[in-house]
Amino acid sequence: DLHGDLGVTIHGFEIWRSICLYTYDFLSRDAITKVDYKIISLEMLLFLKVLGKHLPKYKNDVDLLVKKIFETKYPKSILSKFYKYKNYLIKKRQNLYDRKHN
Image (cartoon, rainbow, N blue to C red; front, side, top):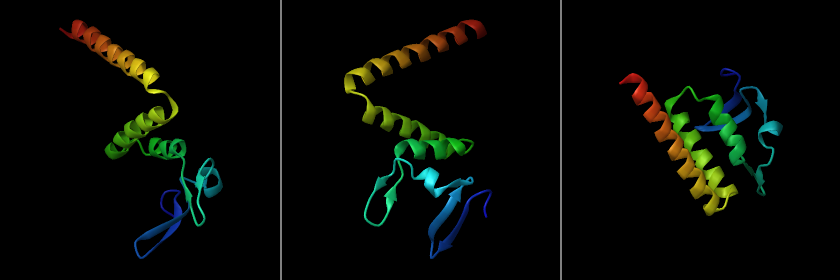
């Protein structure tokens, strides 16, 4: 038991029964099923990373996962518009901040 993570480590390989007390059945929803294993869905991996967002590496992981999910789910034409609008909002917010503090 490591802060709600239940599992064992064998020769450096980790096998988890639960992570943050979320069970295997919960975490394997929408997983890609292979013959001998499952691959966690991007959305569920994002969920797990958000739980650990207090760690700097996880913040970067969250940004990368969101980008990958968007690229997988949306056509490039929509993403292009989204990123332009996002950058516009960031610049606008920065300009407002600069005016307020200068």
